[in-house]
Every structure is written in C-alpha cells, then in structure tokens.
Image (tube, rainbow, N blue to C red):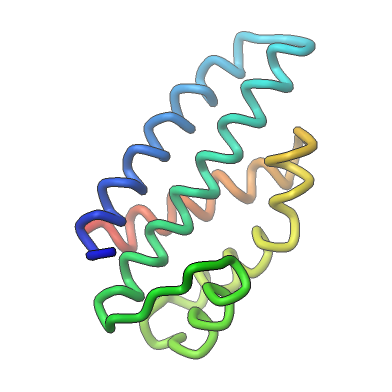
Length: 123
C-alpha cells in the first residue's frame, strides 16, 4: 500500500482506540475488559500502519508481524531509537493486552508507543 493509505488507516485505528479508551475510564467489569481489548487492538494496528507508512517510503512492505519487526530492525535509520525499542516491547506484550485484556503497565505501553509513532510519522 501507499504511505497515504497507511496513514489514513493508522489514524482510523487510533481514533477508534482513543474513543474506547475514553469509555474505559467510566466502565467496569466485562464492559471494561471488552473496551480495553478493542482499544488495545486498535492502538496496535494504528502502530503497525504508522510503521508501514514509513517503510513504504522506501517501497518496503512487511505483510506480517514477523517481517515488520525484521524490516524495522534492518532499516533502523527510518525510525527513532525510542520507537524501535517501543515497538519491540509492544510486540512481546501485545497478545496479553489485545487478546487477553490484561490491564496496567502493558496497556499503557501500547498506548504510549502509538502516540510516539503518530507524532513521529504523521505525514
């Protein structure tokens, strides 16, 4: 995909994540778990699209999480050190948060790294 398509997709996922994150603050129980799951999944997919947007500038397309990590590491000069480290951290914890609704520091890490990516790779 083109960079512009990835940016539009990333912003769409980010909007959904932020909407659910706001609702999360006012929820409890099963609703809280469901909202956190939706927010975390969309934060993560926003992040992947921001990364793919940057990679696509060099006509690099990952097509999988494993290839994205490899491409990100092979082309570190395209990203800040904080973003690479954050993506590596998030890749190792995303399943716990996005698919098992774990709360706390891991959820906060995913949220923080996508905000970094959105400012670093916005256009």
